[in-house]
Length: 431
Image (cartoon, rainbow, N blue to C red; front, side):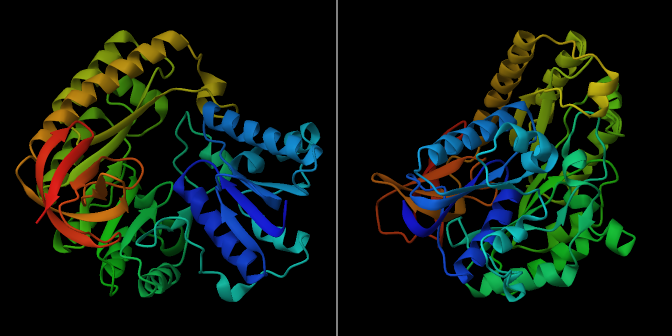
């Protein structure tokens, strides 16, 4: 047990990661040694930042808490704190069930943890973070919460209504990180496209993206988590105009069958979805679309699933993920619908959907063979360098394995020639 060391463990999404990074900066300013997701936890204090989105994520968070509750019983750590989404939603229940935790914090009150440790929150570091990512890229969270109220989603129950960060504050954060050498910025929120509606009375994501793209030092800017209903079309010419805005958009569609979409409360139809996708691809030539689909939602018939399967074959998304419906208590679907698709059938549909997408991904990857592309190098492995193109977000998208024909520098951009391809990997040589 290392005295005056704090180990932070982050579970869940990149939005949680940003919260951990902010807290780490405060801890460091207060004089603590801070380690994030260490291979071996040695600190006397452990902070677990939890996820509460779906069943598997909640189970992982609870198992992690129990693991360190046992470590505290065995005197291998001195204090244990829990924060984040799971804690926000189930604080009283968790406190009653796991008394070994010294204190539970929610999604927004975690800065008070400094007070618990006898330290003051330093407002001058409010916009600063201790990056846990490689130093050449960072996530920028532009809002909290969500106002969409999809039938299956517990996020609004956890985080509340959509709250945009002031535009000047976001731009100032980007300027600070760019001055520190960050080159690539992943813009994130539960819903990017709603940005500004609560604060300014209108969608302002296009203006925000334009301002960030104009910041000196921003080489790549990538957009995550758009929503298809009421999509702000003024964003598209901004994406097309700026070379440093990656031709990439993460826009979760969830389904394509009109009946399923209606029950999901997505407020969009297949026809409207197809028109939006056609316009995005027309106005931003070469864009790679990433989407997410859900299988096994309440009332999803075999016919509805077959329609989704055909759509994935036809739409040819360059990037796609999928997951099976998990009933979350308190949501609209849990209160109004029966979870009527058996678990084994959900898994069958999920496997079939991902097999279908793998064939699409293989074609997309093969089409790049022989082309010259710009990549940023993320890390060096014994046999090759690992990079990404503008079409690939960290952790979730394909990587480019670059032969070690000459020395390359992590965090720098290079032009490479694609020599071969697999569905989720490209192979290349640097020019």
